[in-house]
Length: 462
Image 1 (spheres, rainbow, N blue to C red):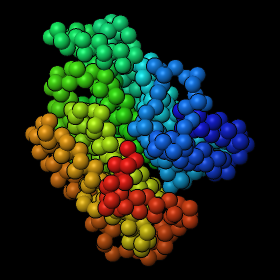
Image 2: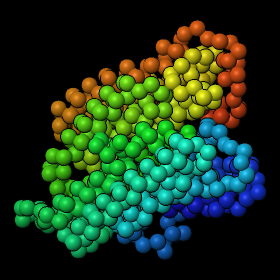
Image 3: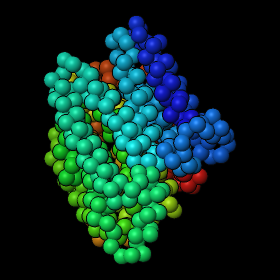
Image 4: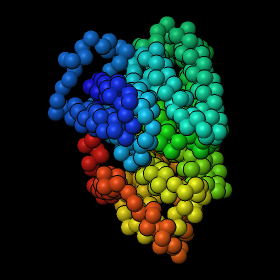
């Protein structure tokens, strides 16, 4: 709870502080609150401090955080801080964009801690509504207006479908509390067939969440929305929404764990389809941003494999994968944003990157991690996930490995241009960067390598 309180408070203070100031002068306030939220939530998750007495007034059946969820809140806060530290602020007056980022992050944390379908729905909406506005925040960009409209329409449809599923679930169980639904399903399992309303409920709620995490066949909005949105917003969608969405999804599937065998019959095909479509479609993309969008779709497919596992003992695998995915994706989006400053959208934007040694190293390390190459946290995450999923469905792991092999072809595309002949003048212009951003970038690279070489650290975190 301390994480939610700090991020929300930071958003409110930033809004009022930056009323008549440029965004860059208000940014430090929100970054401070996000970093403080990450540190305190992580410390509480490790049992070093306890803030539960401050939030005894919050009903435990609505919102509750165990050690794993506190770790995920810490990671969400860190990712929010990392995105706002790497991707540049604007010089427009007002801090409304920053406030919307803070409130969207608050919704993501609500989804992580939800114990009730109403709270899960509220978290979903608090996350989504600011993003509808943020996607079209560059009003002069026609593609941004298109992105905002598409995201709004798809968000409205997915919300309606989720609510219909929640209504069916209530009709079949008589409760909206997740623990009570699970208990009633456990009783029903002893009598054979599960109620049809509950089957319909879990399918419809899953469809609503599959829209949010852009899994096939509900992915069609994602590349267009990512491409039209400002780069900071696209990064936020690709990372924060995905992390919160999968933690909430895992919790929902765990609630229906007595129906796990039946759920796996449709989760596995959706996962395989998402992996293959995401990776194959990424091969033919000509712009970096759309390639990263399809990369995000393929990783949603890998993460869907986690949903076929027994949840409680495998939660560290989910945490490790989301941490690795977030770090690599933020770094690649940052480099895309920096080197597309002159309007170049294709992979040719990286033709001068090798003249900036730090950025070149970041491109190599970020790409290797998200591709799952050894010595990075991305490899550790994929190895743990595939090893655990192999015992449940080995054919899906074979196809996931095929998808990973395909992904090498498009992940390594930038290297063809990065290692080509460079223009020294352009390279000099592209090498300009703030000291704080450089420190953050180096920190991200060190985390990827350190956690890849010492995977026992992530076991301790989660």
